[in-house]
Length: 207
Ligand SMILES: [Zn+2]
Image (cartoon, rainbow, N blue to C red; front, side, top):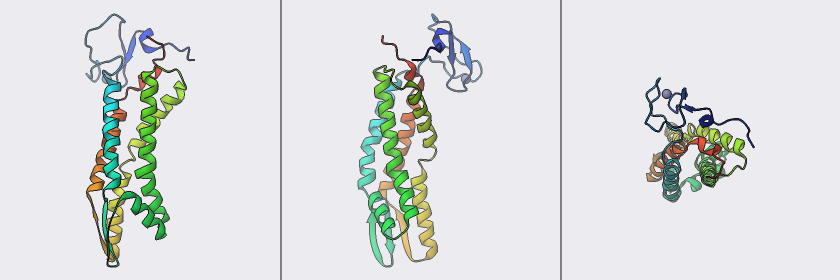
């Protein structure tokens, strides 16, 4: 679909450290470094697909205990409970705190599941060298990168809720082991997105 020339057809290579476009003769197989930031130059990041898959699968596996284990211990009005993320969302919703319920749901279910799906889609299409919706896939990758900065929102919410409830002196809130799994899932998903070389999206010619 795209008629614009590719970087390797022009004999150039982009540094993924600083973005500098360097000259790269097509037959030069020696290891080269960026003259500006010294990062190694790769036409494509080595083993990108394997690494991205490995990190994504690890994140998916840990997402199970993150949802099944309690993330919060609360004793509100003398009522003691340990709740998982979904139970927490439902309880906040029932108590009329729609805002908090919505933020926790978006941060812990909607965002991570969307990221899993997008990364899976990018990986499968890149592996098959598909030329389907190339531009849109490039945009999707940028979206995942952007969302990465906001994924810690959930951990933040627990901290804020704990602070709020402590303030009101009504109860006690403490984080539980589930939130740790959740933090690891967030980090693994971020690393998975970083391992994916978005340039693979443009490799549509079959070899
Ligand atoms: Zn550089």
